[in-house]
Image (cartoon, rainbow, N blue to C red; front, side, top):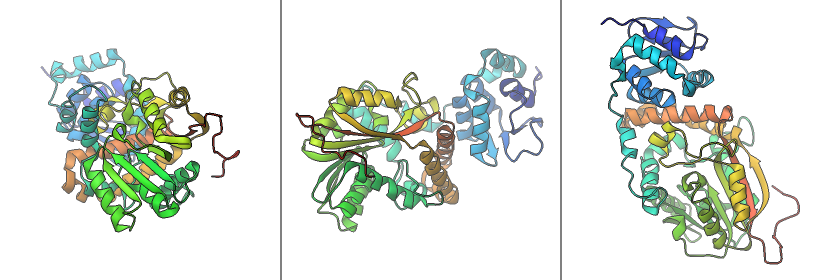
Length: 416
C-alpha cells in the first residue's frame, strides 16, 4: 500500500509547522525554513519506528544514537527548538495519525541500541551496594582516555564555577574545588572525607592548597587507580588516599569536613536518610558537610531522571528538589548554614565539555565507538539546554553537625 503521508507531513503533524528547524526526509520531502542553520535529516524508516514506538525524547534519542536521524549544524540549537516544541508531550492522537499515514510497519519495534541494552542487565535491589557498583561502572568505567578528551587535564566531572565569563574550563574547575574548600573552612592539619571522589580532583586540591589530610572514595576502580597515581605524581601520597569503596563502607570517623560533589544523584530518594546519617556519623561535632548535586526545580516532580539519561547515561539516577535534600539534612541532625544555586555555571561547563568532545571527535570515536560518542554528544548538549531552561538546577548546600550545646564552629557571616 503506498504511503499516504510524507515525512514532512508527519513532522508537521507531530511538532507543528512553526519549529525553527529544517527537516529533510529520506523520501525527498522537507519542511521548515529554507534558510535554517540547522537541518534534521530523517535518514531511515527506522527513525520513524523509534519515534512511534517511544514517542518523545527517548525515541528521538534512539534514532540519533543509531544514526537514523542526523543533525547538520548546532545540536544544542536543534534540542532547544525540539524542547520548545514540547517533544515529550506529543498527543497520542497525533501519533495515531502518523501511524495511519505512514503505515502500521512503523509500529514494528526495531532492536534497541547496544548502549541501552547494557543498562537493562543491572541486577539486585535498586541502590543496593552491588547494583550501585554496577551502575557506576557502566558510566564511569567507559575509558579514562575518553574522559581525558572530554574533561581536559583537571579530570573533573562535576559543575565548574566560572570566576569570569572568559575563564577557561581548567580555571573554573579549580575555582569550584576552592569554593568548596573555603565553604568547608579547610586549614592545614584538618581531615577531609570526599565521597564519590571521581578521579581525585577535590582531595588533591585540598591537600595541595590547604595542607589537608584527605580520603576520597569512589565505586569506580578506574577512577581510584587514576586518582591515586595522580596524587603520587603530585607529591601528595602522604596526604591523599583514594580508595575503591562504597561511601557506606568508610569506617573512619571524626573528620573535620565531608564533601559530596555529584554523589547525591546516585543515592536515591529512599536511601537519602541513610546517606545523611552515614555522612553525619563520619563528622566530628562542629564539622561541616558540603553537598553539591544536580536537582529538580521543585519537590513535586518524579525523582527518576529522564528516560534517555536513565537508560543511556546514569542508570538508577534520581534527581531531587533542593527542598527535599535540605529537609533530609535537617531531619538527620545537621544545621543548614548556606545554600546557593549555580545552574548557569553547569550550562557553561557542559558547553566546554561539548567543545572538547567536538575538538577530539575522531579520537573519541576511536576510543569508545561511534554510537557511544553520539550518546555523549547528545547527553551533554541536552543537559546544557536543560540547565539553560531551568529544567534542572545545581545546588550547593553547606551544613554543620552542631555540638551538643548548639555551637557550630562556623563564622557569623560567610567569608567565601
